[in-house]
Length: 503
Image (tube, rainbow, N blue to C red; front, top):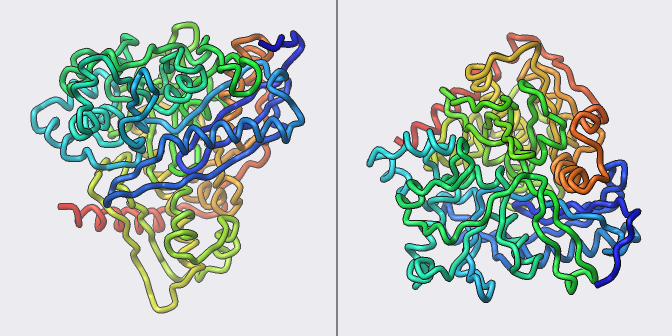
């Protein structure tokens, strides 16, 4: 094995997302110096079903790691550690000996287990699930996806019962592959999204595993977000690299945004949109259909959060491009929105795979209201961007009802959609609150990098890291209260009409 230099301070962050895999190299000051990104195919076998080929996840991850290193002019020996962040809830089951997946990865957006969830609710199990995991019985989470695979893939249940199969969210799958099958582990934030993890005791729930028929031999070891997750197989990059940080993408963004104090709030705009509110070391049970989850866990101590999940955010722009063909690139939506006819009150409800928080309706589907003969690409682009702001307001309304905020609300934002100044201004306008966009917009990868770098001692402690957070732009409300409430009322009417179609 090649000897590592003691002075190396670069960190490689793997950001494995829903539509693409990325790798970003960060320097000793936690600033990105080079990156590589590859999109991969989405598979939709049936309405409401979403799958990934596990080989695509793996190959694009390895290729982007190599690509980022090449663009940075670095070799693997120049990397001190790897941090991993990932799309959460996406479920993989593979053979523990061969590493061969028994089925495609079932993506977090997938709704095929809606009937399983309804049956469990009807049988009275919703309270057990929520009180144990902080989650709602919904197809979104991993638990019912595991059950579906075991029940529907030939021989899978027998092999699982015999101890031959392993389960993992994407982080766990990547750790297993990167370490050559030596480490089967996850972190507390990803475990907290599976529907089978007790967020209060910090252990897998035997009661829920038994309820879903999931053998506990399938489950990975749960570690802190900053911990020893093994080393990469030296054959992959030419040298073994320690893996020292792991967090689900939304929690990694919370860390990257330095939301370390109770009451701090961030929202990430990727394929979906996810708002997390730090509630401190005590979990808060939502009365408004938000999720109680783990924001991060360090030194064995979990810090909790309230989370609101929107299934479709950046994906609505992807739909404009790939589904309708009215744009060629996401950047075109902003100039189109600026040209839109303000006299049209077009409302797009992007419930392509159901509605998330606070509605949690897996059967809802997308709808457009207010179409006229003059509605065109500009109006559709405007409505698409606005739909993200409307959904974010839904989440913040619920959070304010659940948690006693001290002081004014300030929303820290990150993710690809924040590049659109138009979308961020609308977000501030519809919320009636400041929206802060950081200098490093890719907070998710930054959070994963900090975890790994902090664990090995090349990055600073939490307090110093938080003090280094830099704001690039603050968007402040430019519309009055009457405009804001009128627009939000139109959204609520559109939501009511959409939900009425599922009755």
